[in-house]
Amino acid sequence: MSIPEPIVKKIPNNINALKLFEEDIANLKNKKTKDIIMNFPTVYIHEWKKGKKHEVYIGESNNIFKRTRQHYSKMSDKNKWQHNLLNKNAELYVIAHEHFNKSMTLDIENKLIHYLMSAENIKKVHNGRGNAQNHYYTSNEVDDIFEKIWKKLRKDNKEIFPLQIYIKDSAVFKASPLHKLKEEQQKAKEMIIDKVHSALKNNKRGQLIFIEGEAGTGKTVLNSSTFYELFCRYEEEKNNDEYDLGYECSNCFLLVNHNEQITVYRQIFDKLGIIDKYGQVVYKPTPFINKHSIDNPVDVVFIDEAHLLLTQGKQAYTGKNQLKDIIDRAKVVVVMFDEDQILTTEQYWEYELLQEYRNKAIKNKNYIKLENQLRMNANKEVIDWINSFTKQRIIKNMPKNLGNYDIKIFNDPETLYKEIKAKALKNKTKLSRLVATYDWPYSEKDHKNCQSKYWEVKIGQWHKPWNRELQKKLDRMGKRNIKELSWAEQPQTINEVGSTYTIQGFDLNYVGVILGPSVKYRNGHIVFDPSKSCNEKATRNRTLSDGTSKKFGEELLRHEVRVLMTRGINGLYIYACDDELRAQLNKCTGIIKNN
Image (cartoon, rainbow, N blue to C red):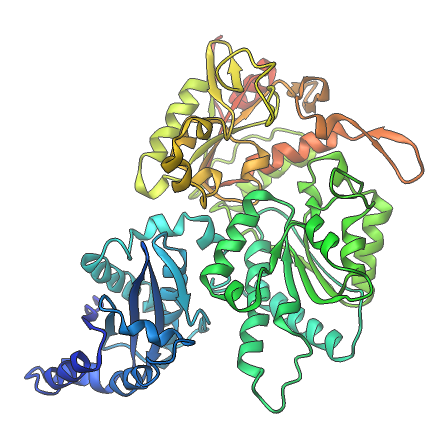
């Protein structure tokens, strides 16, 4: 049985237009439509233009006319979002459906907030408090009804309502706090919030909550969702006489030691109005440490990608352990950690030190291990094949049943590149990119030692620029257009090769991985050869706490390969420079090539 079409009406955003609209609905001969709009729950969008972009307020109500008049009664207050409804270009969308109930309108409201917050032309979303619902009688219809609603909204205004696939592929959407969490994530979120509240009420400090999970287990979404929940609960409770949350939102921070992720998080909390209300809440670790003192600890710090924290001094950071310095400056610290994504010697954690923090959290019942793979649309057999390659250093026979995932082995880089580019030209798979192990020279500073126009990945006669090279040739407008986009979202990057430094923490539809000369196959095992890597941060010596100097290149290069090979949601395409590795990959996938 097909789902009926939604009703989507747009009117000018003023009291006279609302009055005429109400009269028109009241006089409708179609009693069903009249009943759905006047007596069923509805969802609505207030929209207005601010400069070159748009702002929106999204809500739901059991009485759209009464609710809208309440908004209009506050239009003159310049300190509230409603005063923007005085703009001549302000409009109101009313959305109704015969299957709407309270739970479904809350879900539709949540999805609209999520999508519009992620849309490029939306500057701000007021009322960004999502309220995703659990299972209810018609919950299986939400996605279909939402798609019908979005198509009607898009038909009216493509600038505000872009193609859904463009939104879903955006870095902001993927890291958004408005995702409906899986059961494992939801339990972790509730535990974290309970632990935070308990610690702050009891005036404890130096509390560590340790969340561990491999790539793709949903750490970033859990992190952003839980952090945002603190702000939402604070907003709801701060004027309550019984308020006892124990924290001030101006004293809560989110840290990440990754340039791409910093940009994404700042976009999210700017669009949701958090930065306007509470100031900058997103920092890299070093500026946060330098700005805050041990004597005056902040309330809460969330750390995404905590494995990227430094464990020795570097440039502006003069300490020895960023996590310790942050714990010293906060009452509660929540970390998201994956040991297999440590990539450089200054991030390297000695086993005893890492276990000290992990065991401290376990002892205090502040430890959670995320197990479920959420990024890759891959079955257990495919995950096992990738794990065997990146962890056990063995190449198993390719599973006969790949399910919805696609793995292909290529015998030259050009064919791999063409396949990835073909995927990137399709709307459904446009976020597909080529990446490589760091086995070719690159420098952010200059091109003094570069013998070509760009720092490049070169394999025989084939060559492509490294990441961030092509943006240097863009004009001012071109650079401004990509300023807020992650590397993979920028259009010119389809002609570049990415690295762990631009792709870590992000998803791709399909990932094409070039395994450079540092990844070999010898005597039945994969070998990681630091002498063939150009990643000095991974291959140089590391001075340990006992004063000895040691290399961890093989381990860190293995991590590098794992990060690259776990980026693809729908597929992994591989070209290996090493002849023996390429031959074994072909053999294990049933492809025999005569060289």
